[in-house]
Picture 1 (cartoon, rainbow, N blue to C red):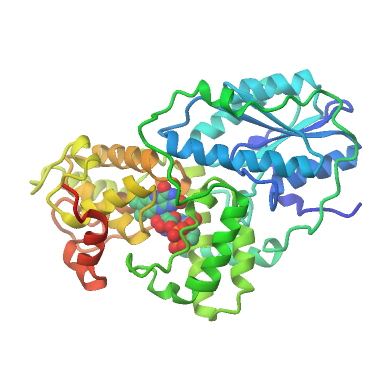
Picture 2 (cartoon, protein in one colour):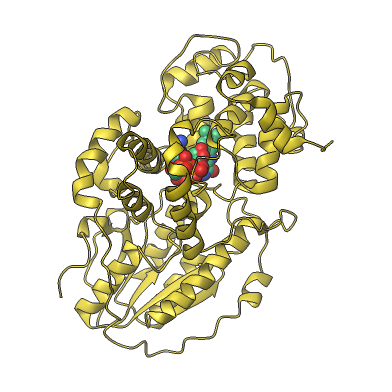
Length: 457
Ligand code: FAD
């Protein structure tokens, strides 16, 4: 059998020695970030290990009863995607095992029950996920291998340290694209041995009964979950909107991809999206400006979250921490509470419109996310307070919240992360400033405000 993938995409978790593979047992793939059966290097790696060892293979997913501030909206999206994964895997003769409870405990338990040879899992840069993996590795007494299927170029191959800015990581990524931006294998062989244990039918209703999540944030119809829906959206974007992507800073232009929910939940692969966009035949500059976001900025976010205390102002560069400290005593023209932010009850119609777009649709345009975050810095007493309020709102309402991109976007907006100093001013110090008049010069602010707040309040 030829190799199915580049093995630099896989490594022993946290650099722990892989140790001897455990007996002749099956291979388990623990899915927790890349929720798809296609274009998934983690699954491909697990299959390859099973083929080499002539061992059975199963995919396990453990549904935690809560995760950060995810609510009904995001859990529904997640579960819709998982149903599709289960059906797709069935077609590939790979069992899908759904467990509930504490993921590291349950995965380690299953691995012991079936005497798995090793567990393959998704790389993730976020702290709670790395903690899950650490605990699972401790309870496993067999190798845990992480595979980076979120980034095109594996996070650890690109850089082993925190990168300062897009300009420092860009050449490193570009140098590796020849090696890693490759097509996925067209057809995957089935596992070499049948799964000899019971595969219980999944009771999806029972699985959601034990969730401890906020039920007041409802699911939304506009975003159908799953790989098929995501790939359909990618196709429509390439055909109808990619050509206008140069106007992507205009929230009214409707030219951005809107793919972040599917990318966040791993329903589609960024690598597949990058390949499709590269093949589109659209203007070189347009394709490059989209790939700058999808590849460079997105991969920079994972690098940042892996190496920084991303949810605290401790992650801001020294110059930004200093300048913000110099301005903590500055008088604020407005101060709002968490509750006022959440209710979109500020004096600024543009901010309120952005907040409303997020609450009502689970999505906010990228340009407005920057404005939205910077204003919260301006209207709270401290960067700590601003950061906590922003992370909570972002994680609670956005489909794509709880993502490395979100923590990095917030740290960029209010803490100068990946940016440099600008002209000093009140409250912001040297952190880059944005204001209403600047937005007015860029796009039709009234049209955006009208669209999201007309007839409300
Ligand atoms: P497109 O412009 O079509 O871009 C395609 C994809 O490229 C995106 O889906 C995303 O995966 C990636 N991308 C685009 N811009 C960026 C960026 N600046 N940094 C990293 N990756 C990028 N993104 C999230 O996925 N989740 C979040 O919770 C999130 N919160 C943010 C909060 C703030 C304050 C800021 C400033 C940015 C945030 N972003 C977040 C990054 C970015 O704004 C969104 O990814 C983008 O707007 C999503 O819309 P789209 O898919 O239509 O983007």
